[in-house]
Structures are given as structure tokens and as C-alpha cells.
Length: 94
Image 1 (tube, rainbow, N blue to C red):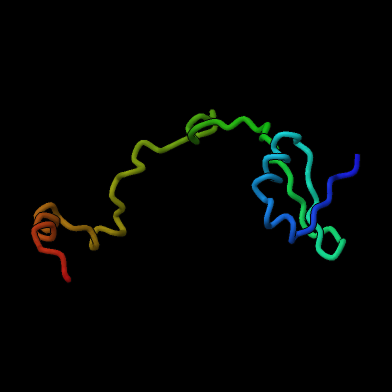
Image 2 (tube, one colour):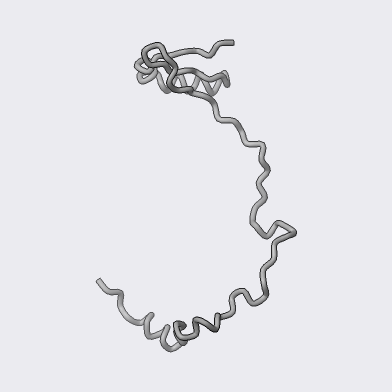
């Protein structure tokens, strides 16, 4: 079965109708310019890929028990609790 061909100029004025036709019939429509196909209006294909939520669902997933422990190399850059409170009390700069 040959795909329906519609000129771009005609498609501009009937786009909503053409979209409804493609969705209903599940067959693509070729949009042509000067008689040559330039664009295909086609229905979306549903994905058959089953998604698994979260990376922790994999049996290969591993996270170290100390993943959130402070790094010794960055001790000079970390703020103490008192310093963090002082920063939090300052009004934002305009």
C-alpha cells in the first residue's frame, strides 16, 4: 500500500486533520514539496523496552559503607559547624 502524499502547503492548513488521520489509521503520510517527498508524518511506535526503576535494582550494584565519609584530602576546605552557622546567618548579597 502506497503512503498518502500531501503537499506541504496543503499540510500547513490541515495539520490537525492529518495528525488525527495518522493516529487513527496508524499509517504514515508523506509531505511533499514540488512533488518530491521531504518529510514523513508517522505515528509513534510504543517502546517494547522494559524499564527498571533505580540503579540499585541490579544485583551488580554496590555502594561502599563509607561513601559519604569526609575525604582527608579536603579537610582544609570543609567548614566546621560553627562556620556553617555563621555563613547561614549572613543575608544574601544583592
